[in-house]
Picture 1 (cartoon, helix red, strand yellow):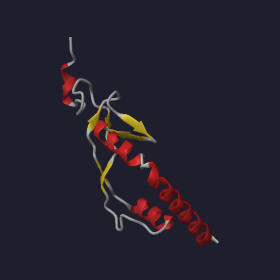
Picture 2 (tube, rainbow, N blue to C red):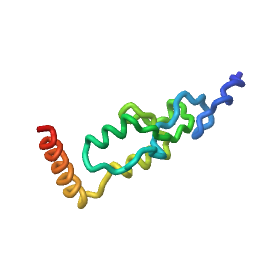
Picture 3 (cartoon, helix red, strand yellow):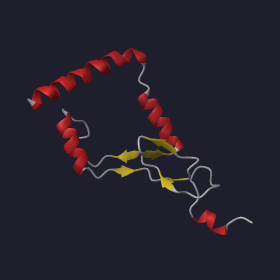
Picture 4 (cartoon, rainbow, N blue to C red):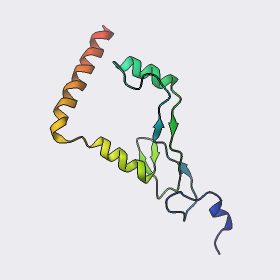
Length: 109
């Protein structure tokens, strides 16, 4: 016999299992500015930030666990798309990351 209480908190995606997690994807940043000039500004904002997350209820099977966060299937697809920068743009990304790291090292001195 099915447990009648299982549908009190169903997974938003499969609707067949009990939700045990919430989607952690950040949907709204409550910080100013969103874009930062250096790592120090980013770190300070993260420590004080009060961001909003997706919070869709998820079962273990529908959750995608990434770096300590649970992502719903919808936001997992967005995560994969954002992570996969086209090859022809990666050289610019690497150049800027190197420049930022070198700038941070100079600021620490």
